[in-house]
Length: 325
Image 1 (cartoon, rainbow, N blue to C red):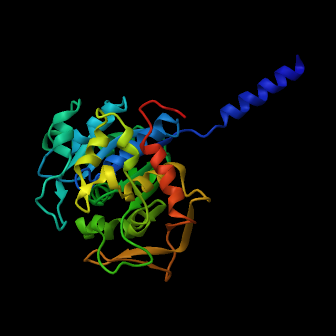
Image 2: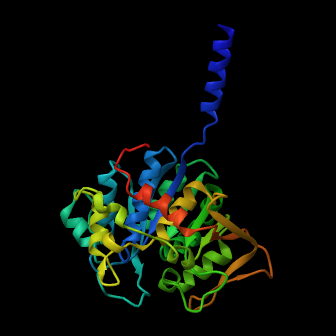
Image 3: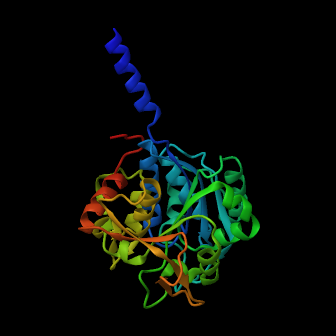
C-alpha cells in the first residue's frame, strides 16, 4: 500500500510540473503567402497537443479583399476555436512590391468556409485586441509570434510600453535575413520604420528567424490527403508557387517554422542559436547582425538537415482538428 501511494505521489508530482501551454498572440499578414495559413494550422495543432494556448490573432497587412480576418476565423473555426479574438490593422502595411494585388486565397476562405468574422475594416482594431489580451494575463507570461510587418508591434510599443514590458515574456519574429541581407526581406520591407523601432526599443527578449531558414524548407503536399473542408488545404491549393499550386509542390515554410520556435523554443536538435549581438535595420529594410553591442537578441540557424525540421512541421500541418497524437 505504501509503495502504491509513493508511486501515486510521484505520478501526481510529475503531472503537476508538466509544462503549461505557451500563451501566445499570433501577429500575421494573413494575405500574401499561404504559409500564414499553414502557420496558423501548426499553431492549432500545437494547441491540440496541449503545448499552446492561442490568446488572440491580429493581422498586420491591409489586403484589398478585406478578408484577412475572415480567412483567419475560417481556420480557427475549422479547428474548433472560432471564439479566438481577432483584430486588424486599419492602416495596414502596404509596402510590398505587390501593393494593391488581392490575396490569392483570403476571399475564397471567407466565401467557402464557415466563420463569423466581419470585413477587416469592421473588425476590432489590432491595438485594442493587444491591450485587452495582455491586460488580462499574468506578468511575464505572453509570447508574441510575428510573421509579417512589425506595424502592430510598433503601435503597441508606442501606446503601451509599460504593458509590453510587464506582460510579454518574449517575441519571435520572422523577418530579415542573417547575418545580413543583400536586399530587404518582404516582412521588413512592408514597414521598415516599424522594424527599426522594434529592433531598437522592444523591452523583452527577441528571437529572430531570417528568410534563409524558411527558404531551405518547404511544406504543403502533406495537405493533399486532407479533406476539402479544410480551409488551409484550400489556401495551399489557390496560392501558386512557380506557377503550380503550393498544395502540389510545396511553399517555403517561413511562418510555420516561426510558430514552432515560439511554442517549443529553439530545440537543440533542430536549431543553432546565435547570440552576443543585435539586429539592426536601415531605412530601406536591409537587416544585419552586429556584434558591436549586446542586446537581448538572438537569431537561429537550422541545425543539420533542413528536411528534419520540415518533417516535424509537415506532421503538425497535416494533423486533423483535435488530434493529439
